[in-house]
Image (cartoon, rainbow, N blue to C red):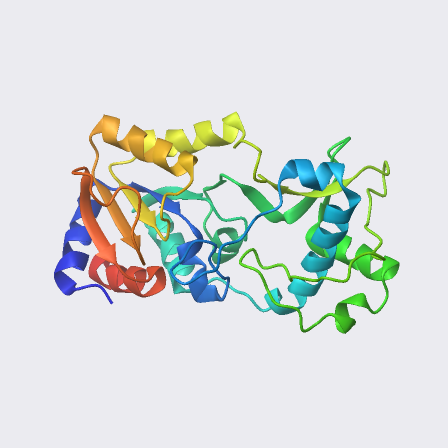
Length: 275
């Protein structure tokens, strides 16, 4: 838990409310979602969009992992940190959440203004005509194509993205768009893709309208987050950081408050001071 003095300094930044908020994987670890870059996590090689689109073997591996992983992720719910941020927005203390996560937990917690930099993994779209479906719908189609597969592989290791590391996928049949037959993909930004310009511009607008920027659970290893920090620095607004482990901006003079700690417990403590 953060020292009371650190929390008090963070609470003082809300005198310039509303603050903009940028979140990363660290806010969702308290919901049981593993972190790609947290301390002690093994190195991973994520699937690129080129691999997914060009090689059926990668698509088989993806959908098999998504289906098996869904059996364990079905109980994942927003944690105290997500809920606190939703209440901050309702109270006018923040103007919304910019998130690098694709887990949909901010929306489920009640946040209304959510900018999903990397998309939303609960939405599936086809690559030809942008037909859209829910993830649950598509996984249901997977089950009809591959009866019993999920149960047989239920013990597979879960990766940091929430999908399972399933090895026997050579016979897997992958679902396709029922409207046009094209490849289905999650509506997320894969490695090898860029954040869509309109999405980044919406995030920029939140920072431009804010009296400060609060970074939560992100090491800022992704360039998009750094660009938003740069926008805040150019405006001269205060920047606060809540994170377990180092971030890319810890040494910068523009960081007004730096709290080493978990997102959920820190935001709960902060909420108590702001009441």
